Amino acid sequence: MVNELRHRRTLSESIGRLLSAPFRRSGAATAEHHIPEAIWAIKDVSFELSQGQVMGVLGRNGSGKSTLLKILARITSPTEGMAVLSGRVGALLEIGTGFHPDLSGRENILLNGTMLGMTPTEVGHREDAIIEFSEVGDFIDTPVKHYSSGMFMRLAFAVAAHLDAEIMLVDEVLAVGDAAFQEKCKNKIQDIARSGRTVLFTSHDMAAVMRICNSGVVLDGGRLDYSGSAREAVARYCRLMSVPLPQEPAAGDDFRTVSV
Amino acid sequence: MSSIGQASEQTIIRPVQQGPSLDLPELWRFRHLFVILVWRTLKVRYQQTVVGVAWAVLQPLLLTFVFTVIFGMLASMPTNGAPYPVFVLAGLIVWQFVSQSFQWASSSIVSNAHLVTRIYFPRILLLLAAVTAALFDLLCTLALLVVVLLWYGIAPTIGALAFVPMLAFAIVTVVGLALWMAALYVPYRDIGHLLPFMTQLWMFSSPVIYPTTLLPAKYHFIYALNPLVAVIETSRWAFAGGKPPDVSMVAAAAVIALALLLSGLWFFRRHEGTFADVV
Image (cartoon, rainbow over all chains, first blue to last red; front, side, top):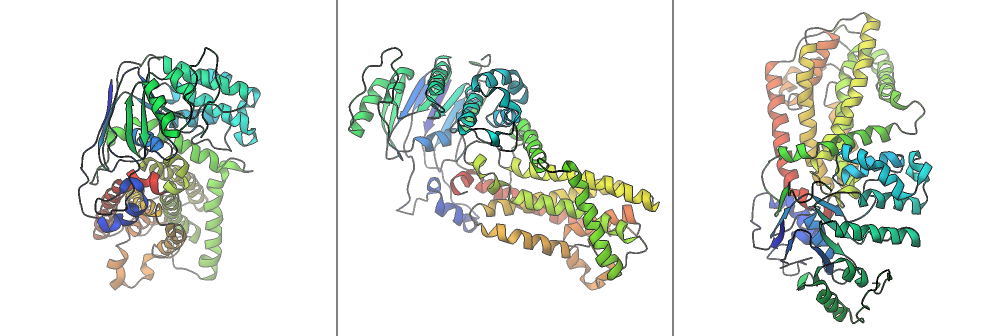
């Protein structure tokens, strides 16, 4: 399994430009070559990732991490370039996608699970595990608008965590709920990372990156600053942010070293 | 966990493609999501209402009542011999579907912005789900129509066989027009203000509350540019008697409906890649 991003100039001029003008003006990803002030959210970012690798995607806010994941998740189209992904892609860019307040927890599991790419049968098989993980108990048949925000997030994370895709794009959805549930979320993410899947993981938690990831890239201003080992990526990132390198994580030692 | 390592799917991501193409294999892969979207639309619409799904029958019933009082009794609209409730319901069955599906489908991208910005799926699914959900209401109106026909002791004519194929024209027209509107709605919120007005105008330019014969014959060819005219005329022929629409009118409807669909697909496909950035 190889994922690669290769960039080339492919945007062709074509008919219907007039009609597309409003779209072109507002979207950063739809920049035109002849507009000098066009902002590229990411440019010249090429890397390969083999099956089972867990890659940390590091960079300050606005460096293009989310745009990269959004392109790989096909939420937004690249202006140019190409990416090849071999395997089913699961995107956890935000939890609770498509949750409807008027529907019950059980109905939202079906809705959200299907939206994340599971078939209704797969959701059915995992329903009990999801409900158990979420700890919402008897509230599962109550409309989620009556949930506390903690319960809502726990259920949302539980559905996302039970997604079974070969390639997982994870954008800092970890750590919702109270301290105990946050711990459970982090453990679950590590389980996902260790289950042989290919994972792209963005986080500002360097201790977590060093513990989970075996490779890393650093983005700066939309460009690839570094690609290689997770340890070196964390070091580059800390230098970039002028913060001290986190301590070597000991087993069970889990706290946020860097918060941005 | 069983699927790991099989590399079942390969995805190639490139810049937005051109052309009025519809990736049918991909739509098929997303069929579960489509079913869930339709289910959600219907479920949520009748959730927390006292009479629930009965609204799907009550709405056309109340409209029929209002139109019968105003246009049937007060304005004495000519109906070619049919009782006005039957006459107007034969028009409303098409019109209610068109107005609902057109407005829902046109606003489906903007009203589901939280989905569009967070997950990938062919965006056209939102439109198709809106139209399919409206078809459910059409079935309820059809049940009402059957009851009204029984009440008046009127049997449908042979035109009833043409009703379903002609309904496909209405669906194609709505999808085509909604593709344009939905894509334009993303950058231009003006569309939201225009939609009710457009729908109103469309209703008055379709023979919903009045018969086509009310219009001078020399304007008929302009009138026929609206594909709904042929569809509603077929419905009238089927359920309220009268004569079938001209072949030329049906042909014009087919050409225009198809042109709307193809151009709509082209425009929508061109822009769906940037919806998440702009919406």
